[in-house]
Image 1 (cartoon, rainbow, N blue to C red):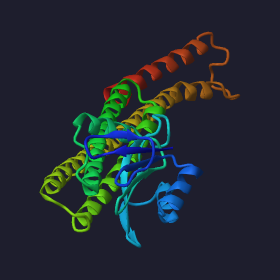
Image 2 (cartoon, helix red, strand yellow):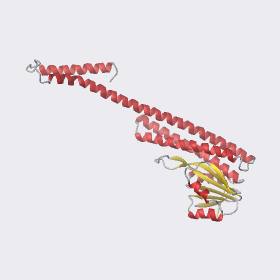
Image 3 (cartoon, helix red, strand yellow):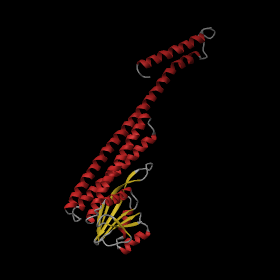
Image 4 (cartoon, one colour):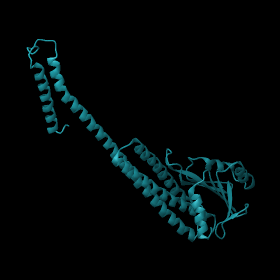
Length: 308
């Protein structure tokens, strides 16, 4: 699916491509690829690179074409292996051609267009569009990080009441998401530092780049903080689980040792040997009393030493 946007005075949709307009391609199909390669003469491997979910943040040049790959945050599903992940967003520039390509539909791009329409200013040039995409990505990293923090706190509250394997798995999935975020944010920062010398930057762009640097630094530091909190939380609950297991094992061992004494007495008196109590009327009662007394004495000793 592709959309055409006039970016001169605000953001306005167009029916067809015009020189200088912004072409937004989302989830490209065969017709979109044909338009980009046949009509705009874009190198086809650019489209293939953007479709690679593991493509790192970078830029590439080929015959006057500049391709920029930015890693943007994306929410898949809370129950997926990594609910929050990052995907590549391609920005391709040459002359009056400005194209963005994303292999998935994201909330960030929808919000980006709505926000630019509310600004009603449009973009001064292609570099302005690129840097504003960087800024939007940084803001959405921070939004998703707040949601991740909320999920961490919710899991911690649940685990304070009852430690469940599902809660531990949820925390593990969030750890994977934070790892993706940290890697992508570092890649975007390195990419931005290189693009400052590749794209034409005016005074307004310089201020925008400074804002992007601040937002990305905050996103990186926030990701690091939440990752450390999550590591600490996982270690704490792992220690709690081990401690609970040790308590259970100590309890079972203590009970086994307490039961051992009456079992020993019953075994001695139950042997097929002459001990003088076979025909005595009080023999059985004495064996029972000795068993009870040994059990009580062992129980008292274990409780005194806090073994039980």
